[in-house]
Structure formats: C-alpha cells, structure tokens
Image 1 (cartoon, rainbow, N blue to C red):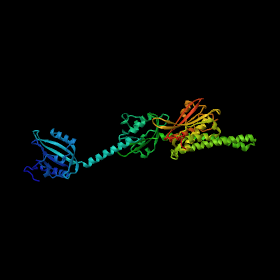
Image 2: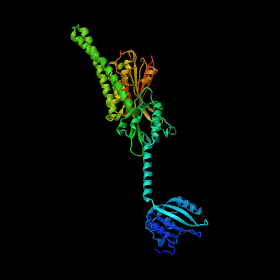
Image 3: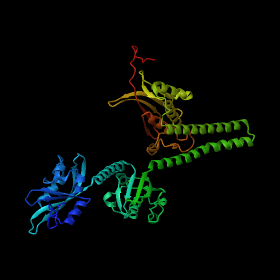
Amino acid sequence: MNVTPDGNHPKTSLPLVWARAVAESSQGIIVVDASDGKLSTIYVNPAYENITGYSSAELLGKPPGRILHGKDTEQADIDKLRAAIAAQKPITVTLRNYRKDGRLFWNELTISPVHDAQGQLTHFFGLVNDVTARKNAEDALIVWTARIEALTSMSADGLVAFDENDRLAYTNTAFLELTGLPANAINGLSVAELDAAIAHHCDPEKIYRPIEAKMLGINANPKALESAHEIYLQQPHKKVLLRRALKTPFGIYLLLYFHDITARYELDEMKTRFLNTAAHELRTPLTSILGYSQLLLAVDYDSETRRDHLETIARQATRTSEIVTEMLDLNRIDNLHGTDFVFDTHDLRSVVTEARKTFHQASARIILKTPPETLLARVDYNKILQAVTHLLDNALKFSPADQTITLSVGRDDNESDARVKIVVEDQGIGISQIDLARLGERFFRVDTSGTLPGAGLGIALVKTIVDLHKGTFTVHSTPAEGTCVTLSLPALPALPLDDAGKAPA
C-alpha cells in the first residue's frame, strides 16, 4: 500500500492506521467521492470485494451500486437510498444485489455523508453486510408463520397463547366463536383475567376450574398442566369445551387449547338416559314374569287361574323380547349407519300389501289404497316393511276396535323431485301438540298408563330407517280425532302401463 509523505492513504486521505483497519475489516466498506456533484467510487476494501465478487479495479471510478443492482432497479429501498443521498442524510437500507457470478445476495447498506470544515459534502462512507442468510431465515419464518396462521385459523379448536409477561398475545377465530369473547376485549389480558372472562360465560351450576397460579411459576412442574378440564359454557351457546394447557420453555409462555366436546357429551348423556330408561322398561315385565312364575311354583292354582297367569307371563315375555329386539335394531343402525342396508329397486305397493297381511286377524280393519301404476323406489325392502308395520301396529293399538285404519301409497310429483308417499291414517286417540314435539324420542310413550304394550322405541326406529333412506317422516294429529303419519321417499321413474292400463308384472 502506497503512503503519502504525511502518512495518509493516497486515495482516501485516511491516516495509515485507519486505512489498515478499514482494509482488514470483515464488513464491506466503500468510499464514494461526492465533491464534484457526481458520485464515483474511490475505494473499496477487500471484504467488499469478497462480498460482491468484483475487484476494486472493476469498481473504482464508477457510480456505486449500479453494477450490483443490474436490471433489478424497481426496489422501494433504492428509492429511499436515492432520496437520502439527495438530502445528504444517513440511511440504512436492505437491497437485492447480484454478485459478479449472477448470484443474488441481500445487502444491508448503511451510508453516511462526510462534510468538510466548511460544511460542504465531500464523500459518502458506506458499510456493507451480506445478510442473505438472515433474510432467508426471515422469509422462511414469514412462510412458516403464514402456514401456522392458516392452520390455526382453519382449526375448529380454540387456541390461545400468552407471552413471557403473562399477557394474552394470540387467539384464533375458533376460540372467539366458541366463547363469544371479542378479540379487542381480551387482548393483553393475564391468565387470571382470561379465566374470569371465560367463567363469566359458564354455567354457574357447574364447577369452573381456573388455571392455578402455582402451576405457572418458574419451578412449576409442566405435567401439572397436562390434565384436561371440562368447561360448561352457557353463552353465546350451550357448549362443553375440553381445556388443556401447555407451558413452553421459549417464546410462548403458555398455550391453551379448547376442544368442543358438546356432541360427545350429549351422546354420553343420551346413552346414560337410554340405559337407565331401558333398565326401567325391562325391569317392569321381568318383575311381572318373575312374580307370576314364583306364584305358579308356590301355589296349586285351578286351571283357569293358572292359564291366566301363564298368559300374563307370555305377554310380558313377548314385551321384553320386543324391547330387546328394538334396542338391538336401533343399536345396530346407530353403529353401522345403514351400511348393512340392502338397497334395491322395489315397487312400494308390494310393501304396503305385505304389511297389511302381517295383521291377518285385523286385516279387515285396514283399508288399503294403491294405484294401478308401479311406485318404484330404491329401498331396503325389509327395513321399509318394518317401518310400515310399526306404524300400522301403533294405529291399531291407539284406535277403537270398531274403527278402520287407512293405509295408502301414491306418487307425488312436483317441480323439484318425485316422491313416493306411504300414509297411515287412523281415527284413534290422537296426539297433543306437546307430545308431538317429543315423538321419536327413545322410550317416549304417548300412553303413560302402561295399559298398552310398547316401549316407546318404535317411532324412533321408524324415523331412523326413513332418515337413512333420505326420506321424511311427518305426523299430523288432533286429540280424540286421529293421527296421520306420512313416509315420503325418493321415487324412481314409473314403468309404462300396457295396453290394458296395467303395470308390467
């Protein structure tokens, strides 16, 4: 390195010791002459050459940076840099630059203006850092953050994150929808404050277990947070949420997870009620069977009394068998969701005809109405027959012995779709509006006297069968006048009639 008589670097007029320091710096350094109003590079250090791939000979005397930008001049930070140079102000920018071999690198450039004793601009001094690795890491973080944000926003589970200062830093949309808490009202809350806000929306009859402060201390055992607690919300809607908490060693101080278990909770409740009611319904006939059996074993009755007791046992055994059968049918359908149904094309006229034959002793009371044309539908023949048979059985049970029941089937074509409707109409005791609302609940019985057989499972079974056929079940009833039940099923095109006006066999 040449030195002037005063001990300065010949190109930069820097003292020799500073020139050596600049030359050995790991940061890229560039000095630009601005004394004549034009910007030209007068010095670059070896680090600058290493970063850019250009030698000093290729850079000296040329405008700074232009060779590094290439054609990529549409950058917001380039505009900022130009404005700072024009205003003779320092600035730090991050630019997309290109090495001599064409590879992109991110250049963090800091420039400072240098003025002489009279305040005139003489030079610009620039520091260059290759921040490609940092920029790539930042971009990767942005991508991952966007992905996580997308995942959490699409999640049906509520997520809440607290920072290291015990302040709520993030909630996803699902949490806000589940709890009804507005984001602007809970941002920045502490764990205890959020606990209080959630508890305010919960059922006061249920215990709400807050996240205890002792679980969150520095020396707290993370496993103390692993247990899940059920939260019984009343607002904005009745829901049961399962809350879990996770304490993390970095970044996020505490993560809360809320899973909606309302459906599972209601199912468990329904199963409990079902089992309790089933046990009660089975206990009644079994008690009767056991009692009469013990009487027959203990007492030598006359033949008429013995026969009466045996008929009671047979009747109650039949009732028990029907309850068990219907329970098993419902359970199988619930578990298999109709996957065991055998769907095929059938003429529903044959279904209603077969159902009427089932009640051969009471067939005279059943008036059958069928059209001459075929009424085709894709159904499980035995399941639809079971449903119609249940409806006829109910109509006969709840109607006076001298009254008739009408069983009809017909086609209903409208603009949207074609349906086949099976209608069972009686002139029996009817059903009140209050009871109609509960019709189809398992073990619900319109007759509470116990004088009529049945466990209250038949209509539930019928509705389930019709639902799995994508049909509809409707009931119209007036107390003391009668009930009309309609099963509506998707219809297939009817077969054409022959010359005699009859459907083909």
